[in-house]
Amino acid sequence: MRLFKRTQSVTAASRCGHCGHSIENHPQRDIASAVIASPEHDQAASLVSVREWEAAARHQAANEIADIRVWRAVRCNDGRVGVVSMVIPIEMWADNYYEDVLILTPRDGAELARFVNLD
Image 1 (cartoon, one colour):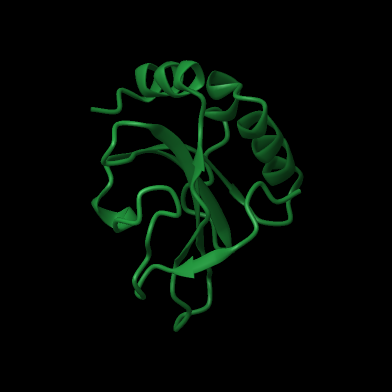
Image 2: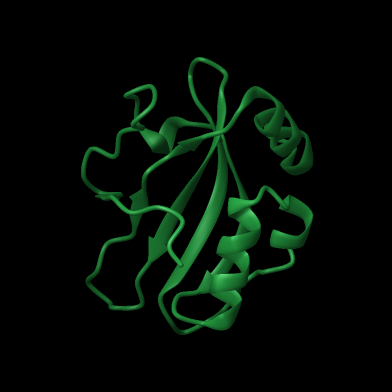
């Protein structure tokens, strides 16, 4: 299951679909990561989609030799909090890329910001 569909190259002008500014300049904190096409990926994606931050954070794909998706909390310039995923392909010449930012409700955003200590 993919949480986000449209993708943007990190090296290209990666713009937030909500505020229009560069995603790289948004404050960010990792939530979870998983090897793409693995059972852990589906579990992490599901937990992120239902806002189960603590359970999602148990999924960390550190030092894996595979394509990885990382879910991150981001704060837009207007203060709203969202989730963006970034795909890190294993291919040597492939660029990392962001997928669409999902802006959360104020309540969910505040909860996520507290959980990951998003300044």
